[in-house]
Length: 629
Image (cartoon, rainbow, N blue to C red; front, side, top):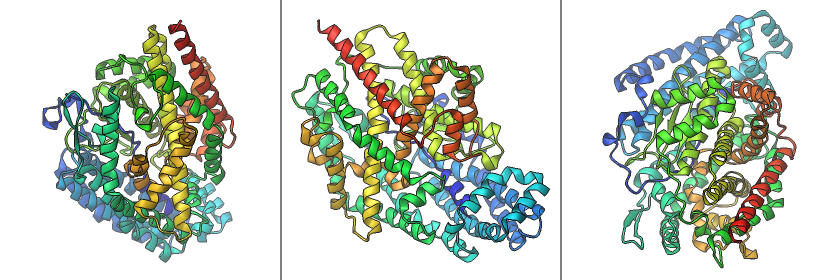
């Protein structure tokens, strides 16, 4: 049952940003104050309650069997089946997320790893039992489906879901085939699972001694922090050490990624798609053209990206810009720090244009422990918001270290949280899960409002340069870098689909070639050292979500267009935006964004983003010229 499989896929829909680690932050989770840790007892009171709910869920699965072969008999049968499966999916989501969040607190904990593995197997059984539903619906004549919808008003809740099943008829198998595809999920997640445990818990991260004599561990969070240090030789050493260790394990990472891609090809072939790209995008009815147009637009505007890189080179006073210089502070001596409490105030003030009700929920996220803030030993790297527990509230994981980037990441994840909260409280469960394509709109929208607010508070030119530079860094990371990843992902899938092998060394070569093109290596814009070639193995999305990263870029362009209207005081635009956040998955993402006021099938959103980027670069150059005279 495809819609169920898509739902289960979204349960661990994680918005991952590489966060940073503090020099002095407490790493012992037991010593971190409870107010800075999420409260999982809102989901289940304890692990024993989870286990009882799991056993009850397993016993309830057999109910699905009684609907088999009956869906065409009456509209009540069809509704009762869809409604029961929806109820089960809601409970399964609750079970899965509790296990997953518990594991993310400490990925070394075998108890929660076992719970996650167990619920994964149960999910496969669930999908297998429900596999007959789509083929049975497809066997019903369209006229009879329409009659059912008119006779049973409660089916209206499932109308979009039914329409989507009918739309994908050519890519749906019979009941036996769908059952096999559902059961294949037990194997298809192996590469992702292995990558997660190896990368977060078992990878032999190295330590380096910096020029001040401090020895630091370069795990993922450590690398994200220490690549930003002001001493250039330290940055170079950090990159050489971290990337060198990734290179040492390129064969292992390469095998994991190749197995993930082969899983994508399996689903592509079994569902009769022309490519893995089409297979992935069709889940949300996204035209393949949107993906290719993004890559084409970015490649056509690399000169604008290079203009920013030249500005960075000027501001850093370098004769030659290297890849390891890209995360260093743009403005020397400006170290923006914000406590969690300061970030809360800045973010809530920045989001006031979205209304009191919106801001009140944001405050509740802080006060009611929806957020797990600080890094600790074994904790999952990065940041995400998970809104899959429909009857409770969203949960956010951060690795907060009191930097401006951390405040921006917090605003970003609160955007996801608000979209989940508004969708869950406005939509019935079957249409509450919003499509991934729209997810990054809410997050980058919040970042845009925070940037606008902070710039209005700051008068010091150096600090203003730093904040504006942070915005450009966001464009680099969200629009250009994610599109670079998208081009790499497309290239390696196309090779695998042609039957070509993908070893770690081959992946290194492809990644280095694309990265050099984007950063203007051959033009002398930014030198991409050869050790960068294994960076692909540090990009979690490749191993978890196929053809996901491009949506960061498309969503960024959409949110840029929408936020400009809201900041201009357009009340109608604000109302449309809140309605968009509350729409969940009640329509296809392209349609939802059109209703919000942006058409993603055109190049207009991208063009507006480029205009804003050039405007910011020009403003920074104007400030620099003024300061130098």
